[in-house]
Image 1 (tube, helix red, strand yellow):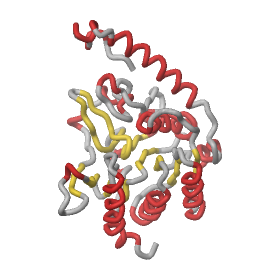
Image 2: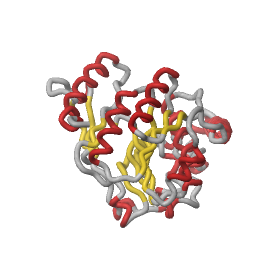
Image 3: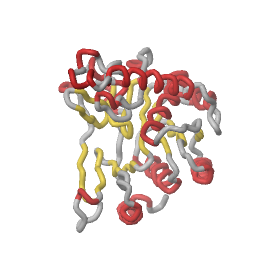
Length: 286
């Protein structure tokens, strides 16, 4: 989505940014149009759309992590108020996708393996959400729907749809200057309020917005953020002797977000061990 011409300064024009960004936008939009028309690699999107009609559905976008998927399914079954939990697998690895599919099958949770994408992981996430909106959520017409990251784990009773009784959407807010959007890893929507809007869950990097920020123009800028209830977030070290800057986790309401490894595999392995220890009491008996 290109910036408005008024947003460009003289330096931008000298560097031809308006033209370059317009070209890139056209290319990204073409990729999006093609992607959302692709069929799922596994699973029946039409049957799932029919199954969510009039219900509250939470959609997890999984990615190459069957262990996280297994933990989340078990914890959501224990703690979270919802009607349908869908695993939408955006994995790039065939073996990991097969393992995630088996986790979902064993738990009796609907599963889709989303179309392959050649884009980078963050951009691929936005394409995955747009595919789900076009092929599952919008035709399915649920009462409400939400998107979740796969490394987000509830640790206490939660009803993420409850705030929708008084507002059209709910989640954790991220900002970029005067603009804001809901983090794509925890966002809920009342379907009736958004069904006729051209939602776009991609990034809008040209104005500083990450995945989900494409909805700024069509949805968020029309709302008064000060009047909305939004989720809280607390960032803490994943281990007491490690500074936040070297590795952290987040608490979004009562949900533990493992967060990525920042390109540090050793941190990822240690963090996974610590997260397993934190979740163990909640997984007992599952």
